[in-house]
Image (cartoon, rainbow, N blue to C red; front, side):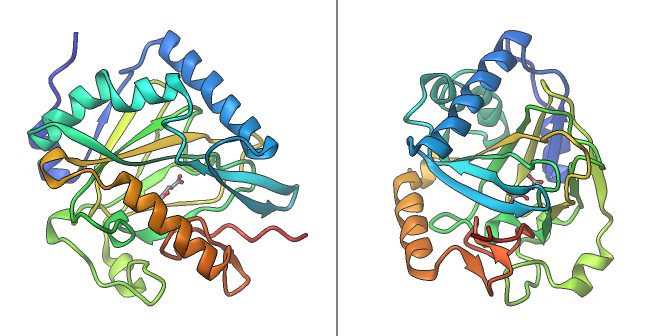
Length: 256
Ligand SMILES: O=C(O)CCC(=O)C(=O)O
């Protein structure tokens, strides 16, 4: 049976935590599927994979565009509980816009303050669900969120991050999560995260949807992203690895 979400709280704050929404069986299946993805990243399997440099060496930072290649992930992302819950938040059927796993390995980079909407082309409004597979704490690099989504697009700098003077004024709060919890957040919700300073990965899926009435843009999103990466290379200024269309990830490019 599916719980009723506190839709009013989501519309007021721009984010909503649902504690312990997943079963142990679901978590185990997701964990095994993400382990398969990690193998694909090194074996040349399906998906789009991005690596970053840490003091311990080059590590996998992100996998994306995998939902059609793994039935466990495909069912979890495109069917069942998540789709039902997102239907409550959108007030209509959701359609998948993009999917990614951020691995945030020990020493893995954080993300500067940004709004996802800045990087999400083709449709103006999205809702994402963060699905942690490891504890997300301030030390492991949990998200920090701030009110302000209702204002829409905040001023950005030339990198696509929230302008520093604006970011300093925001009332940031950490969102610690345990595996089994879900965090829903609007694409205009300001957020950032820090480096993982623990000795274990902080893996989390981020699954992003738009209202079905606004169309299905996923194929176009990934075609455009792959073209942009091919044209621009895989770093910003040789200093930060390019894993997103905007320059908000603080991880370092791999040194060969
Ligand atoms: O995984 C994180 O720590 C933050 C993720 C994020 O903000 C993003 O991928 O845009």
